[in-house]
Structures are given as structure tokens and as C-alpha cells.
Amino acid sequence: MHPKRAENPGAKRPKVSARAIEILIEKAWEQGWWCVKGKKSHVTAYSPDGRYIVTLPSSPSDHRGVRNARQLLRKYGLDLKK
Image (cartoon, one colour):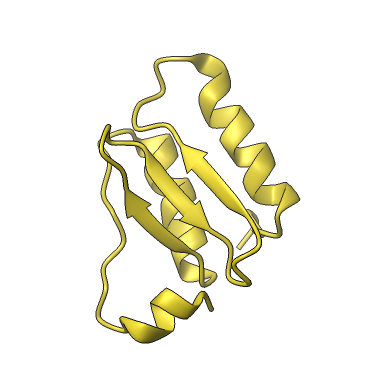
């Protein structure tokens, strides 16, 4: 679990309107990632060990955005099959 998640046990994950991004955030949150919403509605996800950072788009306006984010999350250890 990311250290900030351990510090804030009552923290809630950020919400976005795009369902495809929402699913990625849910899976990351369940597996101990720390996710915060940025200034321009993008969501930044920090890996549980704190080594990796992935910026998720707030909307699927670009068809490659969700696919690229999914690929990076998987590369950095997120199990998308859970």
C-alpha cells in the first residue's frame, strides 16, 4: 500500500465521469495505489511502492488515452484481471 494511503485510511478515491477511466481508478485503488485529482481534472496514480507515477486522462477524448494508461498501469504492476 502506498504510504499516503496508510496515512489516510479514510481517504476516498477520486471520481471521474468517464466509465473506462473510472474502472482503472477503482482497480488501482483496490490494489493499494494512491490516486489524486490534478488541477485540470487528470488523475495521477502512484504505485504502492512509490516508484511509478501514471497520469490518467479525465475523459476518453483521444481513443489512445485509455489504452495507453491501461498499458502503463499494467507495466507498473497493476493486475487488471482482479
